[in-house]
Image (tube, rainbow, N blue to C red; front, side, top):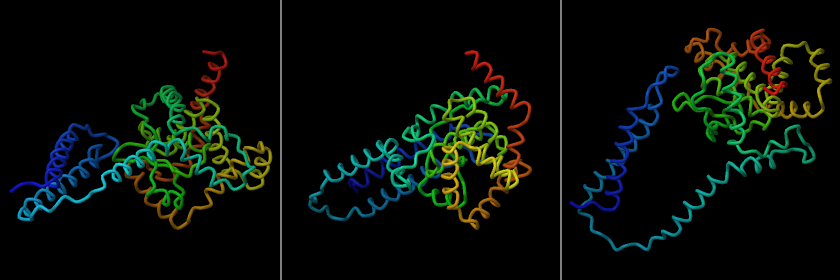
Length: 324
């Protein structure tokens, strides 16, 4: 029996799948997650190998089928589709947010404090954060971040993130950060810093917030502003209504515009989805030895205002002013 083109293709994919599967056995497990970095690739490669083997078997079983005349296949169209898709993937990081920002802006005359940073690519935003994050971890005597990586986005998870009020998460299988596609430009630095704090080993949500805040405050103004907006929102939630109104009135008008934009985004949450997600995540955190679970978020402000954190920030500010 002779293999057709489909059979040879299946055989080649089967061989490649087995080689890559063997390579995943060399991936070292991470103590932070039980499944390890090779778990998901092995599932995908195992499924690919199974389907490839099935293709070869079916091709061999169908060996009696007569070879038909070659069809007039339009390979040019297939090539064009791949080229167009490749251009889409390559261009999207640079134009995607520009398009999304144009259609999501309610008032075309509205401008936020960080409009000039909104057209930066994700790579540029991530690059701004790498050195401040490593500096912050070193000053706090925490383990260094081995591979921060560029943040990923998930089209599948975006509706859930919106309804549940989730700004970002760590993929426990690939150990990479996934951030909400609808985050505003001035929200992204702090959210990414929070997720990178998790990647450096801070499972506790309060510690991740505090480390992320400190990292942003160690960085340029665009990062410090993002962390400051988080701190304003966190502190406002602890104030009585009247005190909160007075504090809000004292803010710069552009800052108020940004806070209002965040509020509009957050109002798209669905309470029943948010509550269900919070309960599940609470159990996940407790299983990872965070005793107070999701309630650990509420301790972030206390950590940020603690003496060690303030001393480290003051020391950094003094050295920066001296030009050290």
